[in-house]
Image 1 (cartoon, rainbow, N blue to C red):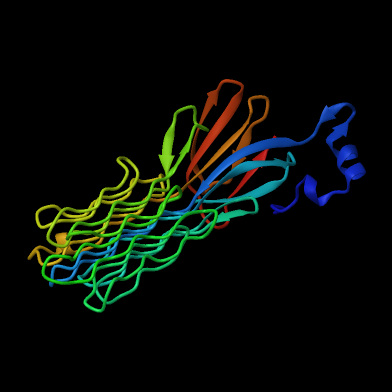
Image 2 (image 1 turned 90 degrees about the vertical axis):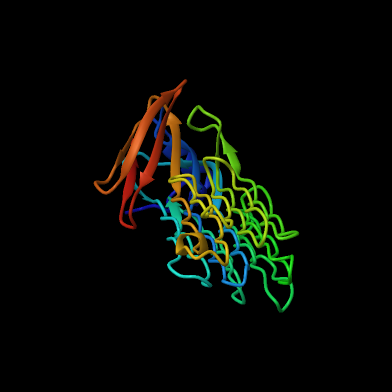
Length: 303
């Protein structure tokens, strides 16, 4: 498999000779969006401390010129799994890849006395008696940091929201979880869709932080469990709430899986290896392929 070869690797004259063969172009221009899996939120604690929101999967977009007949790597990262107990950090999302472009999975939200994790976007910090806990860092330019959790006391126990592609997660405030960071809006599929937004932080004594509807999860409260990120949108999951007797309200919700979207001229086409799940559509003068599942050994070939 040759997935690193492109025109930048050739000298100027060599590139010109390769691009024009008997007057016909022999390259394919591919516009892409690569989104990694979002992380799950951190679990809440019995002492009313909310769990931090899960960080969004990293996202990168651009255009590359590739060669027909050669195989290029394509992989879609999974979202971080739901946590299983109280007081544990959220699980990281997995990376996604197209050609030489790889995005980093989101970082898990923090839990009481447990720091959040960095990632494509970082997880939000949970409330703590030892002081405010900052959100973890994102990976520039793929995403942003998570929000800060409050000092844990009688009234302030809200956790920070997970970071998103477009902005830092909001801080927990007055017992409320911080909202997740905003995502990236793409029109590659012909519709305007948001990807890679952060999950909301879990509540202390108030309301859970919001995610972006249809993309990332909302933080849990005393009466509502945290919600998960949406499949193939790369959003973070919401952080859990603290003292509920129901474990479903304590745990951090799962992050959404990633996606790879490829847009090529309608005169060209793409063929995928057997492990790939994808859909295709014609949008104006282009073909658009939305890859929703692909493993580490999977590839795409253009013609």
